[in-house]
Length: 605
Image 1 (cartoon, rainbow, N blue to C red):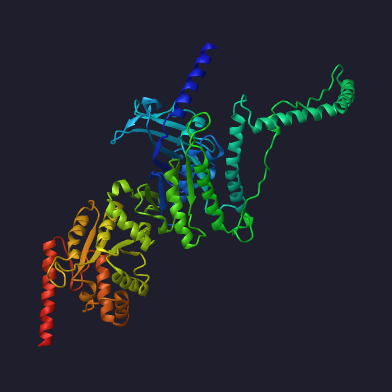
Image 2: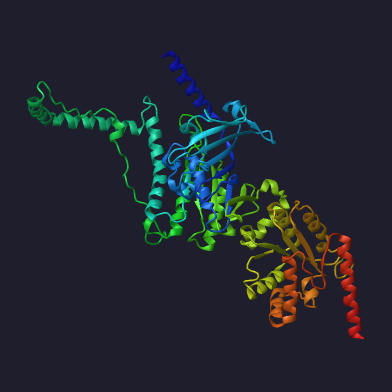
């Protein structure tokens, strides 16, 4: 018995240690053989905000569900049905596995679980495996053994471990309106319930209004029982007489227990509260009568409110369990302005220090390059039909400086669709509106031929550099078209700042990772003079559009330029050059300007 008591005390001590440790940081999720995800698996880098992009039916929602499952161990949401197994059958050679990597800040987790990272942090690895439907088997990577430990795991049992991990809140794309309304009311009632618990937990020596009310209810119950005692005694006597005929010597005694568990008899609020919504000057109706966009937005904004209004510490001093919002396509049913506001609210959610967010989206508006807390993961099917996940953007690795972030923030404001290239296709960066308008006219004229081409309008040379840094980190092939401009201003008396940006563009291109193909083209000295034969100072996009729509020859020249940006082996039109050094660019520009001047002189003569 003493041994058992010591074991219990040790377990309770370990649980207390785990609960009071600093909150861990989740850094990686690996999913295999789960729903549409096969044996190759999908690996996701975790951040405060993770944005999953990719085509339909590529497994994005399955990743949200996988994350919810491991965060819900020990509950129904942590169990799998046969429909969560690949092909709806249990294959012993391809069992569902979900692996989670966590950075911890306290070595008391147990040295056998701690793996030192390159950044000198402590990494803990856990793996959940489902050998059949229902509950999983959790294992920890034992550094000492160099293998998954079949007998033990870090962080203690599920009820303890889960308190150190974010509590999942999943909002599906097409939840039932009643389910959404009930979820919102439950969240809002949680604040009231928490307040009642705090009142209940107050010291009995310093009675508050709640304790005083309990005393009054207790007195009232006792009074009612006393007044009904004669009826109760009569019932006891008659029932005892009847039961004694079958079971001699037995009697019946009804005890109302007016003073036992008095808290359970007191319900301060309606079991089913109403939640109404509508314009402040108009009709308010229940949530299930609202539009889909309003319901879904209200649900996750209610989550935000609850997280910010709750105290940071529980009454016993232990940390409140952090939260995890899993949101499927937040842009559904929202007006464009509401989408932008929704994006801002979601990006601000983790700043409270108690939230992580993972969303799936088909809207580039939900991608903000200027944020420091966002990882973008592209999920798609490879040639073999296997689901794969690629981390295409992580701020800490993109090496964006303050100027880059400022440029990208302004670009996001001007063009919320600038991040569209993350969703796939061939990527072309152009400097300004004229090229963007001309190329999109060609795309519209031949949609089948150019349907998979994304034109990114940088709106300036400085922003071209910032976008190149992102594309280098993105790891995809791309092309850049810019105006060479001239070394000196038109008056020829001082250096041209526009020319001064050319070395920065070249340096960014040269920093591309190995295996990434990039083509750098320059119009000499600018697009209008190079391909339309005239310098235009106003309404450049309109003039370009009018010219190529009316002149087949000019259309062919601009299409040739577009083809050269798509196919890196294709020839470039006249007065356009692919360059690798500033000296080379300057030489090509001088040749074009000299040729243009000679032609002008010959024409005048």
